[in-house]
Image 1 (cartoon, rainbow, N blue to C red):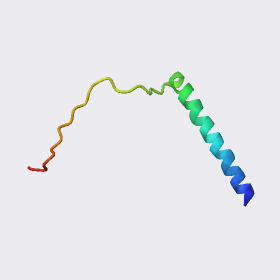
Image 2 (image 1 turned 120 degrees about the horizontal axis):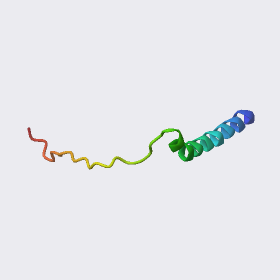
Image 3 (image 1 turned 180 degrees about the vertical axis):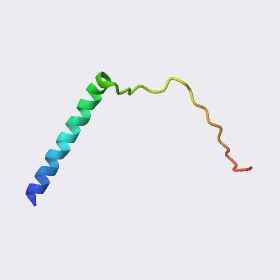
Image 4 (image 1 turned 60 degrees about the vertical axis):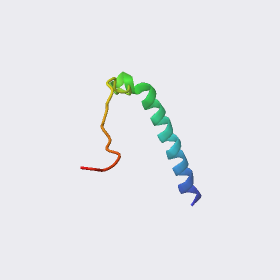
Length: 50
């Protein structure tokens, strides 16, 4: 049982390190993390009338 838990902890640490590496190295490989520059407005109907 402890062997499975130990491997799950190792896997979680490896996944966290991979996510951090992707965040830092992603822009070098073409990933774009910037927010869109245009403003988006969507009308909202508060009363639900047609």
